[in-house]
Amino acid sequence: LVSPLLRTEELPDLEVLHRTEEQVTVRATFPIAQAVVCPLGCEKPYTAVRPDGLFAHQTLSRHFARVHGCHSVQWQYRCRKCNTEFSPTKHRYPLRVVNTHVRSCVSRWEITRQLGKREDLHGV
Image (cartoon, rainbow, N blue to C red; front, side, top):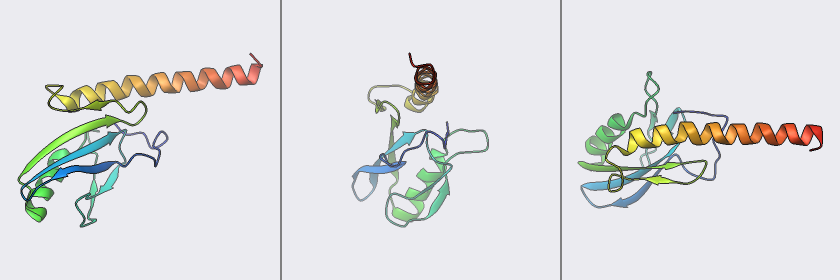
């Protein structure tokens, strides 16, 4: 799920939480930018969102294995709006859960923002 209007720079799109020689744990924050750079240090740019609108974690995982030798990649996810975290230890399908959560969280945020504007405009 991508929404450039809602992105803030406070939270990085991708960050390395833990790394050993062959393993890495990476957290992606949603909504995520269309393009991201490799968080493992090579700064190679990648498209983070596939044409069907889904997160391209397989492409990034292949890059981590091929270029950085990290053959085991664990993904964790976080909502940019409410900072809720989604990991494989808590959710069977964390990417699916975070996508559903972010859609409803962003919608609630937009509705609240619009109501706030309306109240400000009408002096309520």
